[in-house]
Image 1 (cartoon, rainbow, N blue to C red):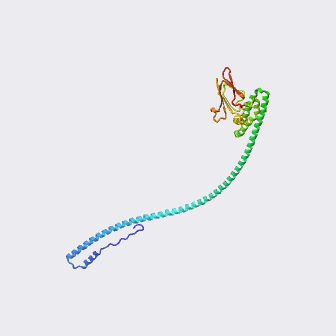
Image 2 (cartoon, rainbow, N blue to C red):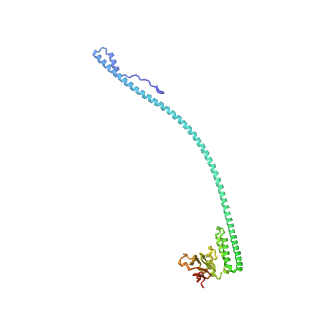
Image 3 (cartoon, rainbow, N blue to C red):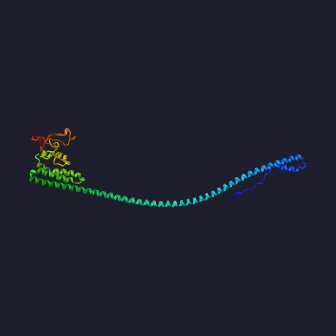
Length: 342
């Protein structure tokens, strides 16, 4: 017997024909010897056949019993496997329930924390917007106030520079009155001092610097008129009496105005003339003297050249240029291209 499975032997089977012959043999006692022999032979044949059938039946039964034992073992193994799987399934269900419960708790805590964080972020955003508004408002106020103060300081600086230029003009007038022969040096020094004071100002006041340059030049107009013999000298590219020799020289009209305001000053005082630019190559021997239109569209072009001459040295006056042509002292007086036509 195998666990859960039992087997019972079945009774041997007998063929119907054999039983009948045996009964007939017992009933036919008065048969002859040949008949008995024939009958006995038949009985023996049937018995041999019955034995063969019994052996075959036993083999079949034995094979079936083996199959049944094998099947019973498989059923028992599967039964054990099913029980194990059932236990594993129960354990997994228990674990699933625990995990689901833990997940639900975590979800609840996360949602609660998220709501808290959202409220905190919303509150911080509100505070940040308020602080940003206050900062922008304060920045705008400071910008306006800074602009007002900067403008006031620029005006004060400009006024101080104008006052300083007036004082320089007064000092220069007194110095020229005391030493008329040094008037050109006084004017040159006064202009350099005014330009140095103006150029040292901050780059943020560039607009005011231009005004100061122009104002300084305008304040010195009386000094220039005092020094220059005529308006031609005032509109020249170099100061009257400038001597050109071995050094390179470049000048642009009007000679007394600072670089950034030359064009504006010339347009204001010398609008009826050609604004000239003078260049002297310098060096030993003959030097090249070139006078050109400073406002020409193509500087250096033939249309822009007003005068071109070679000389050993030259002296520039208001209305003429005295050029020394040789070492012997031979000179030539040339009318200045920037003079006003009669």
